[in-house]
Amino acid sequence: MRITHQKFFPGLVLGLAGLFFLLPVRGQGLLDPSVKPDPNIPVRKVISGNIIHRFHDTSPISPSGRYLALFRIPFEDHYPVAGDYGEVVLVDLQTGKDKVITKSFGWEMQVGANVQWGASDEELFFSQVDTTRWEAFTVCYNPLTGESRKIDGWMFMVSADGKKLVSHNLLNSFYAQSGYGVIVPEKFRTRNHGLVDNDGIFVTDIERGESRMVISLKDMFEKARPAVGINDPENYQIYGFKAMWNPQGTRIMTCMLFYPKDGSRRKVAVITFRPDGSDVRCAIPTDQYAKGGHHMAWMPDGEHISMNLEVNEQKPGLEIVTFKYDGTELTEVFSPGSGHPSYHPKGLPLVVTDAYRHETSVTLNDGYVPVRLLNTQTGTETLIARVRIPDVSDNSFRLDPHPTWDRTGRFVIFNGYGDSSRGVYIADLKHYTQKTLNP
Image 1 (cartoon, rainbow, N blue to C red):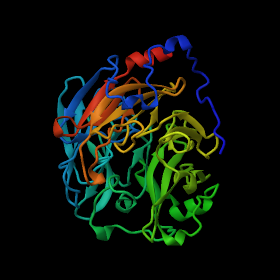
Image 2 (tube, helix red, strand yellow):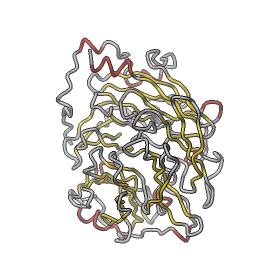
Image 3 (cartoon, rainbow, N blue to C red):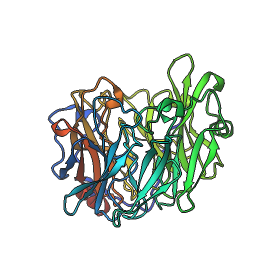
Image 4 (cartoon, helix red, strand yellow):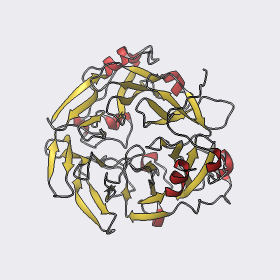
């Protein structure tokens, strides 16, 4: 496979004279415990007490910058069962005060209730479950008025303009991968044996309150070009997973998960398509993904995707790569990769990511993981923070920092485990973003 080199943001000019401010920490330099977080990046804990923010591809800071929307997990030592609830929490960043908005029965350990903002501070979305009928739906809450309304549709991600929701099947998500859906009694879930046409990816028009399956798993598999890479789908359980809007709302990315019925290792493909379910492309087929890879995210241009992927077997660990929505223009941009990478929202050549403790190309496996700032143009790396994570025997209870940019590209928000409790931190990267823009 040929790895190309492509510039995605031709309007950005960055002189070499302005690059002196990036610490010359490369690759495995972060394994050196003497490497300290950059003092030019202030970090503060905002709140703790079993609190997390959602994920690495959405900002918990409201569009105006006034509020921080989070989720409180009720416990950290056992898996939730149907009827357990957590709390949607709002922090006023001006006053420092926090309040519980409501209880949510629609959550799991990794992303909580998928709490996220729409186009303004008047649109805060989260998942909910009606425990009398065990139906999952979405709530839109207005923090300015206290009013809320029910939306009959599932949500994994809301579009940037706040007009549409997209989701995989949140009920069956338990079988796809624990931590990213909602918990209901088992009789309300369905295992997908082979290719099915009654499960897939769902889009909800918020204003109309209409939700529909825009593409089934069967159609996704059969229409994808190039082919997904599975010759015997009848021998797998198959699920959709992590449906994500691009910033422009013009394309959806998701994963197809294939679990062999013989219990062997699952297979994964990255699929993209238009919001009406047309133009289905297999960006990363199962054979490429099987070499090693995880955690994709849309780039700001809405045409390209970044992720960790094994494309250079001569280097330890994964590489961070970018590629077009159809799988072309595959480019290695940084090595080693790790964790949950995402690009600067304004198109700067800056990526933030964390790491799993087992990714020993960048961690010491000592109970701490780095929050990394990578410059893909210079290949240099800056340590934002070393984050403590809980020592868990069940991976479902892990805590990932999930570093994410705010919408302005100045702040990075991440989870941590200070004082033996999950909490949320904010790092101010004004020093780096300003000097990148004005070298």
